[in-house]
Amino acid sequence: MNESDVLILAIESSCDETAAAVVQNGREVLSNVISSQIELHKLYGGVVPEIASRKHIEKINQVIEEALEVSGKQLSDMDAVAVTYGPGLVGALLVGVAEAKAISYAAGLPLVGVHHIEGHISANYIENKELEPPFICLVVSGGHTHLVRVSDYGEYEILGRTRDDAAGEAFDKVARAIGLGYPGGPKIDQLSREGDPLAIHFPKAKIEDAPYDFSFSGLKSAVLNYLNGCMMRGEEVNKADVAASFQKAVTDVLVEHAMMAVKESGMDKLAIAGGVASNGTLRAAMEAACRENNIRFYRPSPVLCTDNAAMIGAAGYYEYKKGVRHGWDLNAVPNLKLGER
Ligand code: KG4
Ligand code: ZN
Image 1 (cartoon, rainbow, N blue to C red):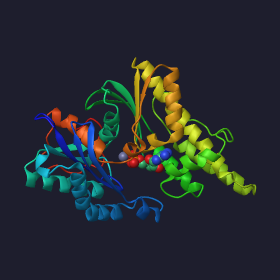
Image 2: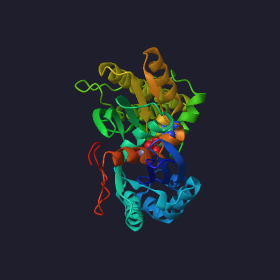
Image 3: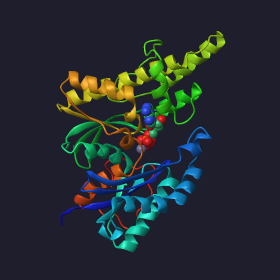
Image 4: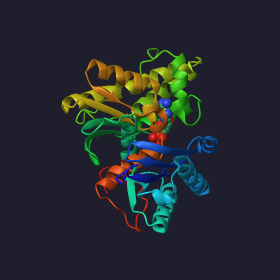
């Protein structure tokens, strides 16, 4: 460790994962502890905000202690505390923000608030040491579907976004409709391996005046109509075919838009991020399209695609280096916009 090395204690609690990590110089993860609440929310078919907040309170101290212990570092070795302060569930975010403020105050450390999506994008820096902006990033999570031009560290231009459901939300809703339970993404990913992606033709939405924007609610309705039609006709539904065909429709649109954005911006690098970026079919399709078009393709390991604090440590480092510091008045901002500080 050099004098100039920067160690960040990062905290994430925006949805249903309580997570803490120690990250060195933005790219080296010394620990990455995630306590998932999925089993708890499964009972209700989705995340229950009140339960999420309560569980974060129960777990957060333990998760942070473990992150420090695994890293082999002390709180006094840290240079800053980074925390997700939006977007997300307000009660869940508040737990992490209050904890980060308390720790940074008690330990005399600077506080750096981080945008959750900036965290997802920055997850790509961890395993790709050579990746530097500018590049295009497709962010596909449970709450967001954004096509972003990353001009520099912390500098973003949103080229396209979803007009209705996020990609992950569509996965979750379709999974529920075919009786797979929560969270739907990984279950559809799994089941689709036994299905035929060409079995059912589901429509792809195009938005005329905004070619980079997405819309998934029409696709979701088409799946529901298909299921209803089968039921009315007394036909048995092949769930694996529905899963594979739906997944293909989502993947095709994501790949098409991403390729168009990279080409039209004159860039040669594409990264993907967010929970849906751990989808096997999407990763393979995006990789093939990039290869065909001579585009360098980056994607985090699945554990760094879904919510974690290592990505907040990566993003927090670049914010810290820019001189971003938050005060004790830092609050949770449930609808925080990307690029706002
Ligand atoms: O990024 P994330 O962990 O949380 C948010 O910031 O929203 O994303 C969660 C979303 C959920 O909708 C989940 O169903 C989806 O990511 N997801 C997947 C897969 N793993 C998680 N979707 C498709 N395939 C997967 N393997
Ligand atoms: Zn997320």
